[in-house]
Image 1 (cartoon, rainbow, N blue to C red):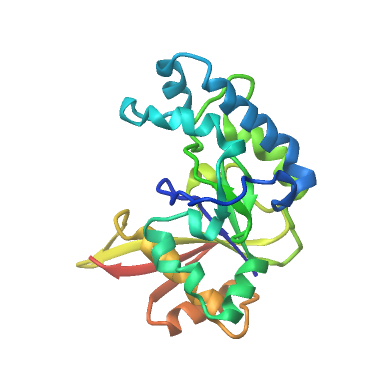
Image 2 (cartoon, rainbow, N blue to C red):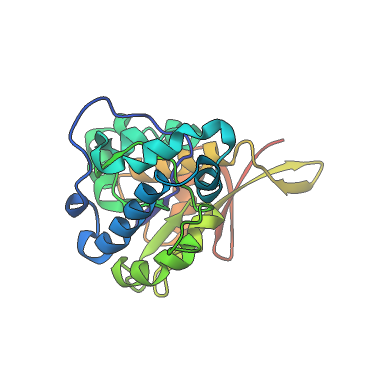
Length: 250
């Protein structure tokens, strides 16, 4: 089993500590040049007009201070990704609060998608940054296309391996397995027999599903086994093609 997480827009700023070491991150050889090129691009943003830089990052004028933050990422303090990424999904997943055995499992099985890093492990040390899949840097272009070939070469993709995908569509576009069994987690509400996707609870549901699977003493090897574990934890679930659908109260 492997679990693919999205990054979070909200992040915690590490207090002190050494800066990121690119050669220490997951897939350092395969993705190192891509990461370095993006850091170069962010450094260049610090030398152009704030308006252009804000537009390139896809952020608002009120977030203009993030341009300088991103331009200095090579010198910024870093901390484990599990502590930097924040928000509803990560609160419900609570990687730092997992029991020891589940934390070890997460270290081996969890990969966090990122527009800047490609994929990182929970214990990979990264700085606070502001860089999403909607950013467009000169000489880089659309980020899903930027990463696609490198991730295809780097990512494990064993026939039959169960891959639990809780990423958003923007990050799924950068890599999908050709051989593994992908099971995407979706959340729906149901009222009076009518079902519709939910947005306000989707991140919470995905975080709780990921936590449930990491806590399991036996890793699921099939979509059916994953669905059974999530149902045992108290969720109403259905398997629909390549999707694990979780039904929540309206």
